[in-house]
Amino acid sequence: MGPATTEDRPTATPGAPWRRAAGDGVFKWLTLLMALSVIALIFILGCELARGSQPALRQFGWRFLTSADWDPVNERFGALPFIFGTVVSSVIALVIAVPLSIGTAVYLTELAPQWLRPALTLFIELLAAVPSVILGLWGIFVMVPWLREHLFPWLRAAFGFLPLFQGPSYGVSMLAGGVIIAIMVLPIITSVSREILRSVPGSQREAAYALGATRWEATRVAVLSYARRGLFGAVVLGLGRALGETIAVTMVIGNRPEIAASLFAPGYTLASVVANEFTETPPGVHLEALFGIGLVLLGITLAVNSLARLLLATFSRPAILAS
Image (cartoon, rainbow, N blue to C red; front, top):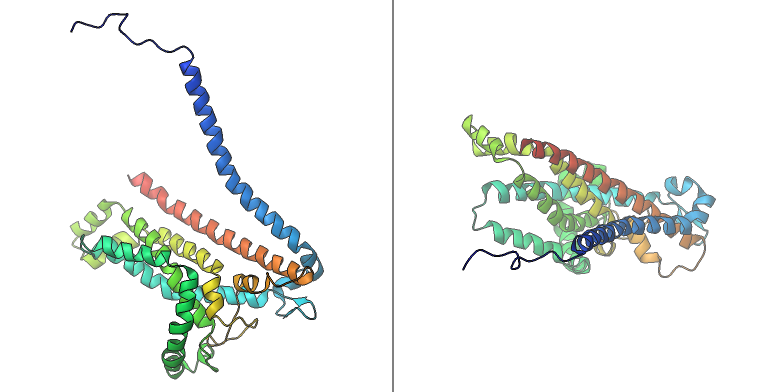
């Protein structure tokens, strides 16, 4: 075949550049609208909670956050027991889940053989997919009886001199709530920690091995120290998930609005009280107080997740510069 003549060459369709530019503009503004809709949804949610809780917050003021009274009959409402229960159960969950999660992530990233890593990762993802109500049922019929008959007596015998492990043990308790939350946040902390450890440059490990470090020393000095900010961000992300857990926690924590030093005592969380009382509450101060509980929970969750995102961004910056 001979060279293509001018007549054989395809000619540009009139108006094609204009159509491409218009399509790019439509796509840009459409995706921008989708992104702004997420922000608008959070803003609308916050506004609705603020509007619904405004009468109660105006009536009780700062006492709503500092009072331990929750008496719907006499219309006295204070969120302090629920804030206490949310914070304590989340801290218990992190104390249990963080070592397990980071240890699992280190093993999957640095130590596990290649053939074993996909299987372990799959099981972690399956744990994250288990519905919370299923974990709650397992907690009621399996975990709580085991805690009451085995773990709680051992803790009382070994650490009974501490106020944390004194008093009667009913099974349903603050500690049981923390354990069930730990099971639920373990997959997310493990997954995020694993991705952070995988993003550590290989030159970090090679430099440690070149200096004669063992595998443990290379992992501790070259990997974990480099990734500590990102790992802390993963922990805070897990904390943000722990703060909002509802159904499973409601089923095992005992749902008693009190502040007790013992982890064997029942407790209550911000999410649990909303789930338990919202549907059966008639319009009035009680319902407005529940809106206030929701507003406090939303504020705490947004603050914790914003802190986690900031820490993760701080970690990824030097990794980008190193590459």
